[in-house]
Length: 127
Image 1 (cartoon, helix red, strand yellow):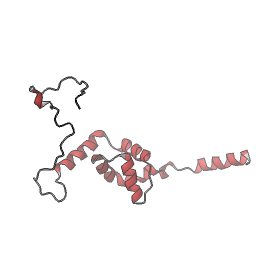
Image 2: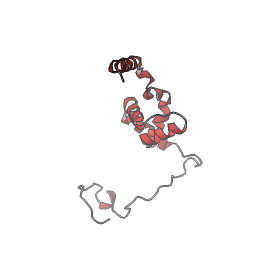
Image 3: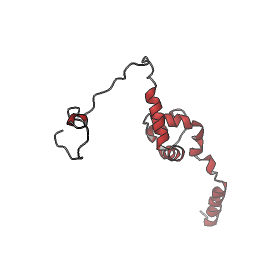
Image 4: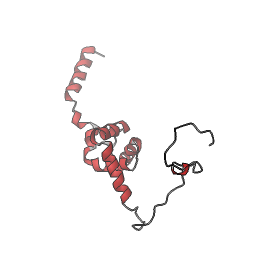
């Protein structure tokens, strides 16, 4: 392969490159969808896979860059709070949500220690 020919082709590609045509630009119309997905704790990989199932190929890294550029942590947290205040589909308003028991439920929580304050963080060996 001829080096000057390769150089000229690479230079042409570099000149024609349009950064707006990159995948992160494709995510802009779906800003509200991605915000809801992040509010529901979906990972970048899960979001990427969801978009791929619907025909939009985007890498998890591109989703991460988009999220860091377009959302603050407070904005995602507000969306989470908004989701928490809405009843789940199929559940009447005011009905309590099912809560799964936490792992290690036998360990005393902060209120069980008596004074309501958390003690020092120490390693426990009584799993």
